[in-house]
Structure formats: C-alpha cells, structure tokens
Amino acid sequence: MCGIVGYIGTKKASPILINGLLRLEYRGYDSAGISTVEKNGLSIMKDKGRVLNLTKLEGIDDLEGTIGIAHTRWATHGKPSPENSHPHQDNSKTFSVVHNGIIENYHELRKFLTDKGYTFYSQTDTEVIPNLIHYYYTNDKQNDTLKFLRAVRNACFDLKGSFALEILCKNYPDNMIVVRKDSPLVIGKGMGENYISSDIPAILSFTKDFYLLNDLEFVILSRNEAKFYNKDLEPIDKKPKVIEWNASSAEKEGYEDFMLKEIYEQPTAIRETIGAKFSENSKCEFENLNFTKEYLSSLNKIYIVACGTAMHAGLVAKNAIEKLCKIETEIDIASEFRYRDPLVDEKTLCIFISQSGETADTIAALKLSKEKGAKTLAISNVIGSSITREADYAIYTHAGSEIAVASTKAYTSQVVLLVILAIYFAEILELDNSYVTNLKKEILELPKKIEETLKLSEKIKEFSKKVYQEHDIFFIGRGIDETVAKEGSLKLKEISYIHSESYAAGELKHGPIALIENGVTVIGIMTDPNLVEKTISNIQEVITRGAKTLVITNQPIDTSMFDMMIQIPDTHPFISPILSIIPLQLFSYYISKEKGLDVDKPRNLAKSVTVE
Ligand code: M6R
Image (cartoon, rainbow, N blue to C red):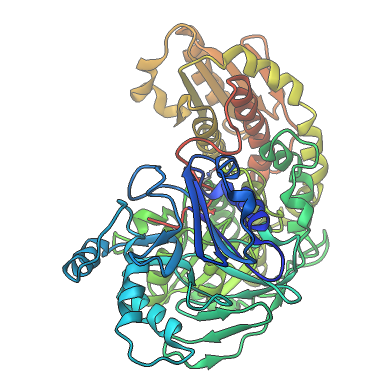
C-alpha cells in the first residue's frame, strides 16, 4: 500500500523518482507526487490519478534538484485528490514528507497541533507528521547538526501505527532523513548517490547493495553517506547486503502484462524454489533450518497463518503435512488469528507465508505467536523482508519479483516449498512414508509438466471468450481440489470483477445450488482419483439445472457432458494444485483482457497490504 521512492545524488532527481514510481505503481495508484530540493526551497508537485498524470504537470520538467522524495498512493484517509496526495508539508513549508502506513492516533495529534495554532489542508493522517516535526524543530533550542534528526525522532515517538517516512528539510538542503516502523523501506547504496524505495525491485537497476532497516532506525542520508542511528540517537553500524536478483524480472520482456509473464515464469520459479534441496535419492535439506526430531515430536500442532492467496497455499500444505508428518495442522487468516487469542504455546510451530513479507496482519500474527512462546518460521519471496527478520527461521520461494497484483507464480512456489518442508519434517521424524520417493520424483518433474499445462492456453482463452460477460461464476471441488477452487475464484474476482464463489462440491446441495439456473457457469476441478466420481455427480446436478460447465482434470473421464474439459498432466495429489491452478490463472487473465480491464492493477487493490 503506497510506494515510496527517494534519490540523493548528483543527477537530476525528478526523472529517477518518476521512473521509480512507475515501477512501484502496483503498490497503489490513486495519486502520485514528488518533492525536490530546488535553489529557492522545496518544490511540491502532486495530483490524483496515475503516475502518468504527474508527468504531465506543468513545470515538472523544469525541476533541477538532485535530491527528492516521491510517493504513489493507495488511499486510506481521504479520497484521491490533489490535497490528499503526498508529499505533505507543514504550515511553514520547511518540511516535505512522504508516508506509507497508517497513523492511528492522528485525530489526537491533529487536535494537539490545532491547539498550538497549526492548520490542515487535507483529510489525511499523514499531514500531522510534517507539522509535528516542525513543532519539535522550532521548540529545540540547540542549533547543532542533529537538530533535524531530533525533531524527526521526537515526532516519530508520538506516532502510533505504522510508517515508512522520507523527510526533506529546506534548512538541510544536502540531507534527507528516512525511518520506518512496521512498513517497508530499503536504501540502495550507489557511488556518490543513494536510492530509497519501498521495495528492492524498483531500484534494482541502479544498485545491488542494500541497507535493510529495522524498526525505528533513523538514517541521515547525504550523497556519499548513510549514517544510522538507533532510537536513542546513538550511531549504529550497518553493512549493506548484496541482493542477487535479476533487474529484468521487473520488466515485462515482451509480454502484454506482468501477470501473463509471471504465469509463464512458473516453470522457472518452481525449478529455482526446488533448487538443490533434495534429489530423488537424497534427503531434503534447508540451509537455514536445523529442526530436530526431539522438537518436532514435541509439537501438538502446526499453525499456518497468512492472507489471501498465501493462505490458500497453506490450505494445500495442510494435507501434505498431516499425512506425511502426522502433526495436526491448522490454517488461519492472519487478520482473524491475531484477534482471537489463538491456542498457541511452545508446543506449536507457527508458519507464516507472505510473498511480500510485508503484510501487516501476517507480521502482527507472527509477533503474537512469538509472545505466546511458539517457534516461528517465515516463508517469503523477498529476502530481508520484515517477516523474515521477525521470525525465528526464514525460508524463501525463489519466484523472482512478482509485480502483478494477482499472485500467480508466488502461489505455486509457496505450495512446492511447503510440500518440500513437509517431506523435510517427515524425514527428520523418521516416519515410514513409502510414497515419498515417488512424491520427490513428481516434484522434480513439475517444471516440465507446468510447461505442458501452459500449452493449453488457447483452449482456455476460447472458453473465456464464451463467458466473459457472465455475472456469476462458481468454482467447485473436493478435498485438495476445493482449495484450488478457492484460489481460482479469488483470482477471477480480483482481476475480472465478476462475482464468484467457491464451494466444496458436496456443499452445493446445502444451499448454493439454489443460485444455479440456465447459463450460470460452473467450473469443476477434479484431480483426486478417490473423489472424482463424487464431483462428477455434483457437476451432473448443475448441468441438469442449466449450468455451463468447464472441467479441469487429470483423470481419464468421459467428456461428453461438459461444455469444455481441460486435461492437465497427472501428478501426485499433494502437488496437483500447482498444475490445476494454471488453467484458472489463465482463465481469469483472458476474461480480464476480454473485458478491457487493467489486469496488473485491478481497482481498489494493491500488491502489498501494509495496513490492517
Ligand atoms: O504479500 P502477501 O503474500 O502477504 O499477500 C497476501 C495477499 O494480500 C495476496 O496474496 C492477495 O490475496 C493477492 N492479491 C491475491 O492474488
């Protein structure tokens, strides 16, 4: 939610900032703005709408400053408008601030500042920040080099909630201060220049050396230096981390949309995620994990906690963990888990999945589990993300950066990683799982089978053209296929805006079948040989009531009763969702294209949900 970019160096800042904002637009796209240090003070240019609107503002090309901050917004407080856009300034225009996060006590702070004579022009929570900094700055009687820093620190101490901030001060034209708490922010170190961003891919083409900030670490940036301070303003030493990502993964590389590119990157993402963790005849190993038989045997329960698609990956893993490790496994939505006083203690292992590693609810759920004494394991796609730094253990999917709001390759990578984790646990527990060798063989064959599945795209496009004008589409399945129905339905809703529901196929008769009438589309997923006949019966029931049907299966079944059938390669049931979701990802993609929508940036959504 909201993207932040900053630059401090010798080049003209505005084109670098705008370029960075375009790369971060997937985090929010309601409005955009920049502030640079110009000869005559701090400039501000901002407007509602996409970053492209910003580039059309009169005077933007004339900005000469080599230091600047920028923001692309996903509105929380106050509708998208020029006033509510960032950067925000204090009344005297001494400070410019961009902010990602939410200030929960902004009403209180606004009142405090209003009583002191400050006035406000926006409805945002952010506007209190520059004024609060100004308040502390003007009340500080020492006039040394750290006055700006002290004012920022004191203001941050008053803020409740989450924030990543970039701050300029017209009295310190060669500096910028940045700080974060529960919202992402990284600093990219260049030669005689520094870049700031909400995430690594946006500035990966400039540098591979990144400083990762912990909560309430303050940084004074100049062209040649980054000075770090802890919350007591004592200097701290920080070394940059080298991030070996490929900058081209943040480009479309000839694909029309990031989502399509990311769907097609799944064979590579899965191959990279499997890496060298095992071979058909060797045990699974994770570089960063050292679980023991004693610890795993002591567990009463494993919790998997996540949001959205990441939570759906957890649902798939439950089956594999329970069957392979014989440990009860519960899946929960992070925003529910954190507020329901879950039964978690030192006998619980809590696994948190987050592609971005910055999802506010997931991070809060992780912190809660730690407080309750559980060991925590984070699964993320982003090295050094908040969740991985907060957890006791962290392992990574290697899907490459995922830009499209709709998650595709991250989901399939999460599923494969979780199943490998389940095998790793089972091997430590020395459980007799005769089918593990075959499962490993099937995992290793996944990239090839995904490639085969992707070849079905034309057939799926054809079906999408038939149904893109529908108002309701149902997804049904049983067992592992029900988890895929959930993910397929979420994908469709978020990028096509078609109302969609997913149901356990056996549940239809208990209510939802009342909604089935002539022409309604029902998509059935059936990959579990033990359940396929049962799901066919349920599909038969909807056909009888006039439904149009698409079936995704890897089983040899009679196709004559369905409007279309997509035959995918067969594999082990624990990992079948990795193949069966692909036609559904493509289905949602083609429907969205057919409707002429913005596939990568669907309305009301943002890639990284850093507010609760
Ligand atoms: O970054 P995370 O994996 O924590 O994100 C969780 C969800 O916000 C995310 O999966 C969301 O549901 C996607 N837009 C789904 O495509």
